[in-house]
Amino acid sequence: MKVIVDVIDHSDWIIRGWKIKFLLSDRLLHQVRLLSRADDWYEDPIVTDTWIAKMEICFNSIQQFYNTFGLLPHIGDRLFNEESGFVVQDRSIDGGHKQITFTLSI
Image (cartoon, rainbow, N blue to C red; front, side, top):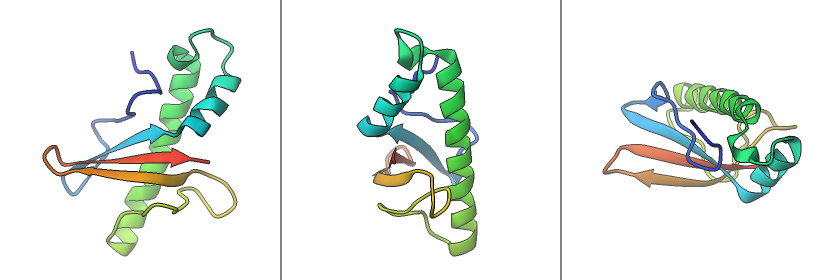
């Protein structure tokens, strides 16, 4: 079972051989917790499925950005549009495992 307090990833989220993963910031996790009705909000399947779907949209946004500009979003970039969406709060690169983890915030 996936929980959203861990790294969120999917086997299809790959750009040029690099795995793309997501983490939610503490501020974003607090908002998620407020929306859940379950005591173990981080394991609530409805919340988890909803946020994994949102991360799919974020990955598609990153992939389109890369396809257009040839680079990945940087810290401070907004992934949906200029009016709403998530901001890249941090970006970690693990060359040994060929993975890039984006920490998202609001």
